[in-house]
Image 1 (tube, rainbow, N blue to C red):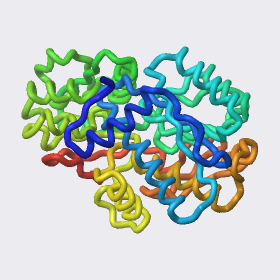
Image 2: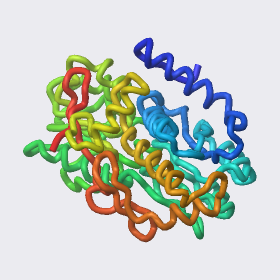
Image 3: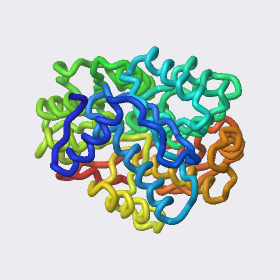
Length: 361
């Protein structure tokens, strides 16, 4: 089985998502004039329903809403599960590159686009819209727009939240995943002399603990240090952590290179939250707002007919000309390389309260 869930409704939705992804890309769209967008993800990560699925669900909800609104030729999403395997990703990338119906690629959260895979997309004239905080590939000519903050922003925010504890040593702990280890190293560098790397079984003397791994390790750690301030990264900012660590999880700070607009009153944010919940029956998870933003951009291109039905070159030119998007969590402006600027390039923090993550100022 590819993954797990915690409620009948979530299970129904999740099984449909995972079945499609595990089976590989879907068949031809019902309307052959409808373009396709490839969604590259890694469902081998811990808690993919909490970490990867929200962005895909948000994209589907946003695109379905555009179709219901009468916009013609809104792109169809096609999932590709890399399983964290570079060779599998490269094979799928070549498949996408040779199918002219594909007009763009979306990189899912928690998957880093390898340089050689990026080169396939760049050579094929496929624009890449990223929901990942991984390094920007160095592929020449790549048209790239990142909708989330890059990894260094998360490291800086984790360090700042851990350093908020007065005096003493801040312990930085990772699980054995390469992403967690790299993030922990960046956090330690940001903290400087105040930080020390520890294992999850050695937390004595820590005035605060920063955890960069997944939710199961975070829940175990919380049980071992019920009174010590705990700051976790995006891989543990999940419903799974809240369920496993209650009631001790209350007060845990979660940091993410994404935005949390669950309690926002802005009209654009409320439109996203209402649209997501109406479609899925779930509260938006991590990276859902940014997934909605990507869908909104694609729908806008279809509505304006800047990018007509199946025309890869038109999408490449249109996306390459995008310098800013409104954003459910606020405007996102891009620099010349397609990286976010200003507040969009900063990580956000939330606090665990019962079964919810509530945004912190």
